[in-house]
Length: 93
Image (cartoon, rainbow, N blue to C red; front, side):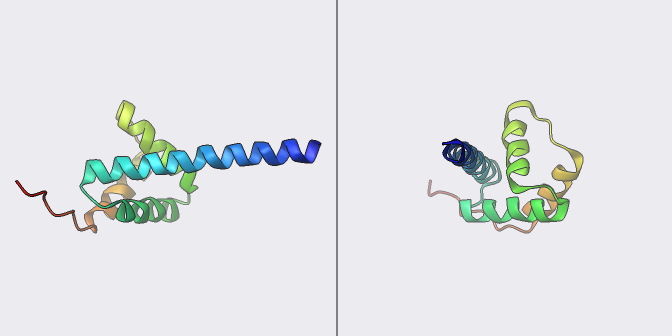
């Protein structure tokens, strides 16, 4: 029974982490006018270049959309990575 509780706890944590990453992808895509696939690439690049777990980078991005605060290291890497992304085509007017 203890193992089952542990597994359920781990699954709940994984679901929350996945939701946070999805929210960060959506935020970056909307704010930066890039496709979700590109936003995923940006998050993974920032994670790799800062040596911060992807989930934690995503948490920072989501918080940033609320309070405007972002760790300088993450902000710098986000700007660097976003500069290499091709924006989406403008919607027809």
